[in-house]
Image (cartoon, rainbow, N blue to C red; front, side):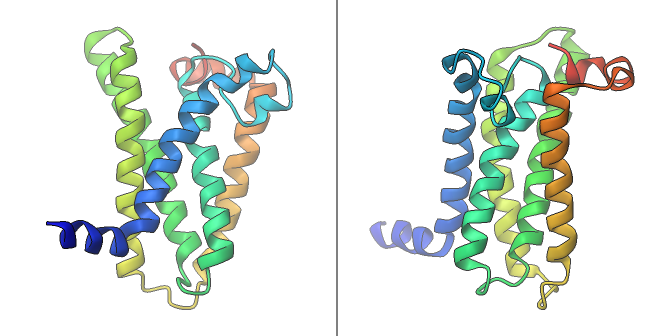
Length: 180
């Protein structure tokens, strides 16, 4: 039994650490803005309200930081690493949104337990998607990494910009996503 866990850890440690980092980082970022006395710089990284958008940000930020850190250290070993991580981040974000709108559409209520659970499940799914993508990646030259970098930068810019100034048409068009 011990060998099974050791083998699993050796084989999947980067993806396990990735999921755990998102879980811990996102949980902390949920409260950091309040702890900082609503510091506007801290708002770039943490949730400023209870909207779905802000919960997506607290998923995205730790996932992005882990991705950049691991890309710096492991990027040469995995040429498609950035592309696979981008796919995994997008999968986690979409999962959170789909779960939220599905259950609130059915129950017509918010449930913190489901919101928190979907966040943690999204982190696990994100790690699994990343790991499987690495195994199956046909982008051996890392050509998709440039596109992945652009996608991550655009998402980061959107999270920052919409934290400070949400365009009125978005709040009107998708109120459940941006308003608490």
